[in-house]
Image (cartoon, rainbow, N blue to C red):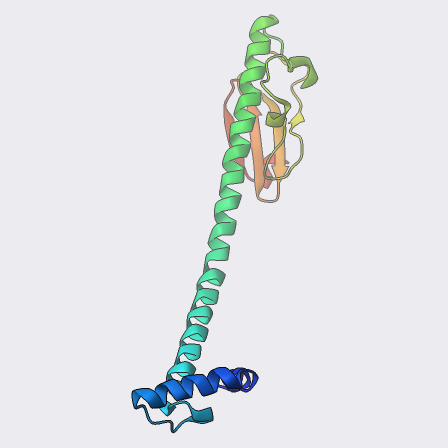
Length: 171
């Protein structure tokens, strides 16, 4: 209401034109600054309605932020598993081409990788750790690469599969 009053003070000419128009229409001017009391009440009620809507939107936004954060975290874990799967498949292709021997590093098998972006774990932003140097396809349960994050990590096995594990299993 104070804001409306300040605005009307700043625009006295407009207020007098509105009041004159209302008098011409037969509306009795009994409110503030020559405006009908009903118009002032409606203006105040409109401001209150807008404020209530803004508060409700703020509450809804604050309720949605944790859900969006969880969705982003889950998407990063899924992308991490996908990247590790690509690394595992590239290692299997390399091993098939080199008599069952896995590469000594990521750089040795870069011809099998489409892009170097798959070597990055999206959930941590760090490069996967390669530990498949000198290993062969003889044992499909061997760990070739892994990535550690706060909640655990992903492990790429020699058979090309990927597992999500807890921090205890990585140690």
